[in-house]
Image (tube, rainbow, N blue to C red; front, side, top):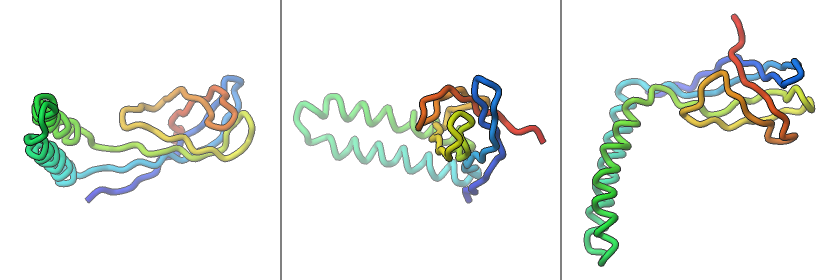
Length: 127
């Protein structure tokens, strides 16, 4: 079963100011990853079958869905964790911010504050 986890991180700016923050992410078990991969491949292949009677478009859609199924399944089976967001105080303007993360993001991450557009860095907090 997928479990939601938290990790302490630090948000720094380019002037050396920093504040504590929390990164939220989900860890997938082997069974969850297999289930997600199976759903993605079956979903794409069902979409390919549904696209068969569509004139002209089926020439692109059917092969596209047929190829996308295994590609998506592979990416889902390899994804052990999904990063969601970082919530903390911006060191530039001292207001609470939420930074959305992509699954491929790695820590340390250089980004911009969604409110003040200032350059910030998200790094792991030393234990």
